[in-house]
Structure formats: C-alpha cells, structure tokens
Image (cartoon, rainbow, N blue to C red; front, side):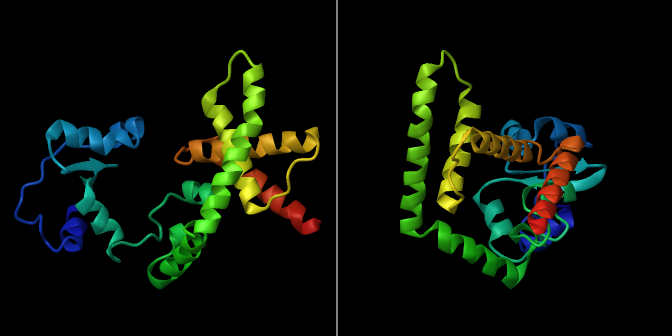
Length: 216
C-alpha cells in the first residue's frame, strides 16, 4: 500500500508522524526474505510501520493488531487484483472468496465459517486427523528414518479427504493416487508465490483433470 492509501484508510492518524524509511527500494529483499521481511525490519527499527519502495513504487509496510484491524475491520481495500494471478489461480482460482469484496465476500466467508466453526464438524475433523495419524504411525515405526514434514503432509491430506467425504483408498493404485494428490497439494502451497514453471504445470494438470471429469 502507498502512503496516501494508508492515511486515508486509518483516518489520517499517521499524517503528522514521520514514518521511518527502511531502504530506497526493497524489492530484492522482499523476494529473498518472504514473510519475514516486514517483521525483521520492524524489530530492527523498533517500529510497527516503515516506508520503502517495491518495484520502485512507494510503499508503506505495517504490522500489529491495529494494522490487522485496518486491513480486515472494514472495506478500506479491494481484493480484486490484489493477488498475483499465478498465486490466485494456483490456490483458489477466479471467483473464489479471496477475490470478492463487500457483501459477496462476507456471504461466501460465512459459508465456510458455518462449516468450520460447527462443534460437530470440528470434532469430526479432529477424529479424522487422529485416525489418519495413527494409521501412519505403524508405518513410521517400521522405518529407520522419516521426513516429518513430508509425513505430516500426507496425514493432513488423508484427514482432509476423509473429513470431506472423499472415498478411502481401496488398493495400491488408489494409494499412489492419493500420494500424488498430497504432493500436488504441497507443491501448490509451497510454490504459490513463485514465478516459475511449477504454477503452469499445476494449472495444466488441473485443466486436464477437469476435462476428464466432464468426459466421464
């Protein structure tokens, strides 16, 4: 966000205060550091707000409860066009809740929350996760070594599939297919912000899957 947008959104509270500057341009630093970029500079400068440039355009970076309230507490900003198309199409696609504003966004969000915050649904999800974890535990104990990150990714995929009502695997072919889904899910999240071939490959596979379902 730029300085004018910040002042307008926050009612002008920062208009009289000098905002510290981190660097002339921070594009490369942001690409290198990712999510830690803002918090690292705020800690270093002992502030919750600083100015910089991204792609040579003036930008204001903020953190903290007040900043979160400014972003999420009202219709100050638009989600339309805010997320790079490669990331949007990889994680949710067009028309998703992440690309809606105002009443349409609140309606779609309420739909998700009505499911996720229901006590029975939460208990069912907890039970499916526990069952998926215990199912894998026996296999882990037989191995000399496991990569916990990869193993837990599979557990999460299994639990989510069971919770959503996706039929359980019946044979090795279907197990391999579910492992493939787990790898694709992990790859989609891990490379969501990448400008590389991975998003294109994922989009292509998703399109092929959709065409196959239509033919079936």
